[in-house]
Amino acid sequence: MPAKDDPVVIKKYANRRLYNTGTSTYVTLEDLAEMVKKGEDFTVQDAKSGEDITHPVLTQIIFELENKDGQNMLPIPFLRQLISFYGDQMQMVVPSFLEQSMIAFAKEQERFREQMNSAMGKGPMEMMKMATPMKAIEEQTRRNIELFQNAMRLFAPFPPGASGDRPGERAEADPAEGDDLKELRDQIAAMQRKLDTMGRQ
Image 1: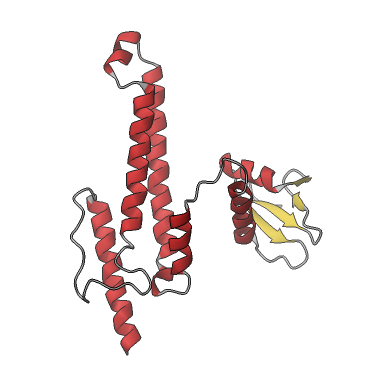
Image 2: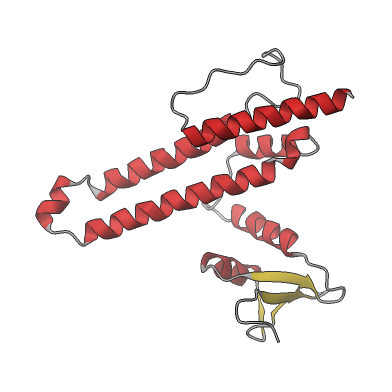
């Protein structure tokens, strides 16, 4: 019997049906999406082989959500850039970079929620001194866009087949970049130089 904190096991059968072993019920991809939103941990296993197929199932959930009217979140330029990294030398650093970017994004969202909850508990006079909720939302949206723009800018020197900067040169640091982004950019640049050296050996 799985421990209390162990992820729930979802079994996928040949007929594509998904079975939640925690609740002993059949579920849909939509149900799994709701579990993710609620922070419920689960793994998906092939019912016959026992193989962990969590990754393709989560990818399928994103595909389904992206195809719902008005729900697509992944812009075409982002998708094109992501596809271009498959098979590229940078592929090995992309997953961890995207993971860290999403963690930073989630922290920003949590900070925003805390600010909004705090604002709702204030009196009318205190509320008047603060930015209106709409302005607060606009500011948060701007911060989130900047976060992702800065994140994607880190990859700008290394697109496949790119030309321009000579080896050893790098673009001037954007003044809007934080110290953490600058440090990560430097690390990626160092890793790229190391990969290039390995490729010439």
